[in-house]
Length: 90
Image (cartoon, rainbow, N blue to C red; front, side, top):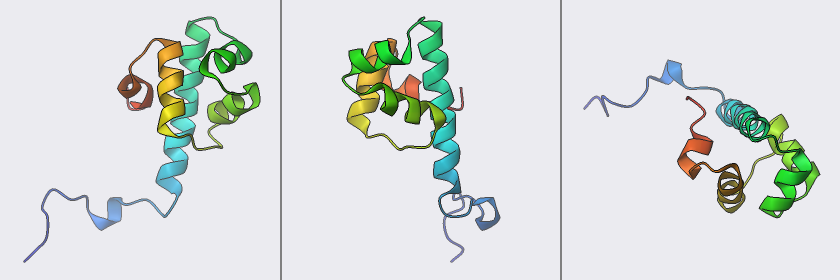
């Protein structure tokens, strides 16, 4: 048996942790872009989403993971769906 033909080839896999780091950086850029489009400061976004400004800064830098509840809060404040927020390929 050859395995799942739809599975990505082993050579296409990223080293451990690298895919996560790339996603977090792309997510951070997306949060920053959406925040700026809505003319919000980090402080305003943080306050409306119930988190600290420093945490929003870490998210935007892509240096810190974020749980789904906080992502949902950010999406609500930024007036996008959760799916739109995390769709970093768009």
